[in-house]
Image (tube, rainbow, N blue to C red; front, top):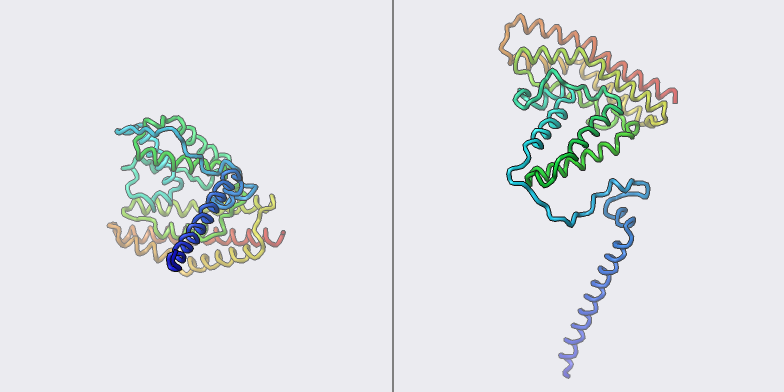
Length: 303
């Protein structure tokens, strides 16, 4: 055998050995994962040893999936009901999300102020929806309905799992939490008619319950030992103070005036609504932030 041929054979052998080593490594890794589910959960699902196993994705079913071409009309109505419930969890959220909610079967008079409910009441709502979902025959659903069914099943499962851990979360931390998001919600409140204006001012006048709920929640968290660290409390107080200053400087009033100008009503009515709006800001919104800030400072000093 010539030296050049021998070199070619040697290169092929080296290449084959490398492929064998790589293939063997992948096989060994696969078998290790196959017989060590805890390692798989930690590596791919970012789960710790204390993470409940029922939060893992369900194993793929070996049964063939059957879908009904026309779909299930009762399921369609159920999805409309749960969508309406989520959209109408509060009067302000409904207005900023849906124009003419009646077209979607949503009755504005039956709005549930979800944030005011106790944790056990919230859990019952999700549990009822979960039971209704389980009543549907999966094979009776269309393919698109089956996709929404799977997504909703996972969503409700997580909601129910986390329902007992409400004290772990705070409404005054995070960028989209209640007292921060509510200002964006109010400034984005659609005013398309005089009725919208009246409803908006009514929302403002009833905002005291919103702030009272947050104060009660934070007090409960502190009593159970779940209140935030001092540095986080200071940051929350600072952010709330800045929002309060922003409102006091006229941001909410200016936003309302600009939207009110687009409504086809008399100047006299506009003036009356403006006075009513400004009074609600002065007597409800600003005191609401003042009370929340004072409550956080009081809790923080006691800890």
